[in-house]
Structures are given as structure tokens and as C-alpha cells.
Length: 343
Image (cartoon, rainbow, N blue to C red; front, side, top):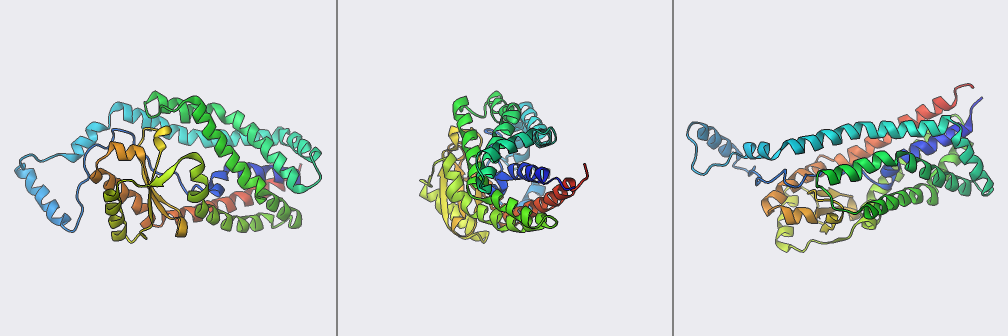
């Protein structure tokens, strides 16, 4: 006998796990710890071959006032930088495993069934029941995973001097992200659609849900820069018009449509440096953190922008969408197989 309650609860588990994808994160932008990158970027223009020849000549006879950029970069990668990097890598591996274990515990302990019963008592309409269940489940998972999230996003960042944000401000940002997830999945009837497809096609529901998820992911990627990002930070047109002209010129050389260049007040959350290109079509934009504008000179900023524009040129946004969708489709299929196991 197929346990449809388990299917529903597992779908909600997957949906909550993939909420940032649906709400739009096509991938977290690269960040640079303050002080790690202090050397100006090396010119890689059309004369790069001549520059390489000059470098080989310099090996035999050092040029006056020549700078060893590699040595400068290595010197800036201090033991503290290395400790931070290793710790964050370890957390990135452990955090999703811990979140998955929490979700499985809620599911197989029968607690999800208790949440379902509460949701059913709140109304007869499927949309209301799904929304209530999602809110309860999201709160339970948030509380259960809070120690890990708090340690990763607050304790570590303050320990290494990469944030001065108050605990209240940080907690407020977490609350906003939770509300975005609930609104995207519950208020907008995304999960209601999933449950409807399950009820109508008990064998192929995973395929129909997966196909329906693709336009949602693409649509989320489109509207995230316009709707979701401004909920967490203030975006304004770049004030330095000279730098804006240089960035747009670099973008034109890379074949990126020249649209809007913004700065964002990320210094309220972090001391890290970052710049990125996100969105597509009318939402495509170039964004620089205010920490980057204050901590780097123009050449360094253009160096970082060149890296970030490379993501756009190499179509990493679209590749990320495709990878996320295929991964979601596989997880939905796997969920259907688990749900069909006999008691």
C-alpha cells in the first residue's frame, strides 16, 4: 500500500530544502575576505604574450621596482585566512547532511503526521492545509537546525572579524528568508499544485511536479533581483560614474548587455568584498557591494568584475538552473520510490 502521507511530507521536506532555488538563488555569489586581495590585478590585454616574454626575461634580470604579485597574494593568505576557509568548507559539507537528517527524523518519527493532523484541523481546503503544514514544518526545521546555522552565519563570521552585525539584525535577516520561502512555496500555491498533481497521478506525479518546477525555477531567477534581494538590502545606482563607465566597457568587451550597475549596502551584514552579475533579460544587473567600493581600488574592482562576468559569459546561471532542475527531478523520483515501499 502506498503511503501518500509520507509522499506529501517528503515532498515538503524536499521543497523546503530547495526553497532557495525556487526563490532564486541560482547560486551564492563569490565572496572575498577583507584583506585577502590587496594586489592590483595583472593586465591580460592583447599584449599578454609580450608580457609573458617580459616576465621570462625578468627571471634572468629583475626589472627595477618589479612586483611579485604571486608572493603578495601568498603573503596575504595568512594562517587565519586558511583556518577560516577550512572551517567554512567543513561546514558546507556538514550543514546539508545535518539538515537532511533533521528532515528525515521529523518524517519517520511520525512527527510529520502530527503536523498533518493539526493542518487538517485548520480547514477543509487543500491550500489551507498545505500552507499550515508548511509553516509548522518550516518552524520546526528552523529551530532544529538553528545551532548549526547560527554557528556558521553568526559565530564564525564574528570570530574572524568579518561581520559587526548585531544578533538581532542577523536573526531578522533569517526571519525574512523564512518568510520568503513560506510565501514562495505556500502562499503562492506551489505546494498546493504539487499535492494536486499527486492526487491526480499517483504513478507519474514526480514527473509532472518536476516539469512544473522548471518554469518556477526560471521565473524565480528572473524576479529574484527585482523582488527578493531588495527585501534584505538597499540597492541604489552606482554613484561613481567613472567606475560605472569602465565596468560597462568591460562588460561590452565580454559580450554582456550593458544594463544597470548598482551598489548595495552589504556592510550592514559583512566586511567581505564581492561583486556579481545576476538575473537575465529585464532583471539582469551588475552589483557591487559597498565594502568592495571602499576597500578596493578601481583596477582591483575590475579584476573581480572580470571574474564575475566570466560566470555570465560561461552561462553558469543557465547551467545552474539546469543542474538544479535535474537534481530536483531525480530527488522527486527517489521520493516516489521510497513512498511506494510496503509497510
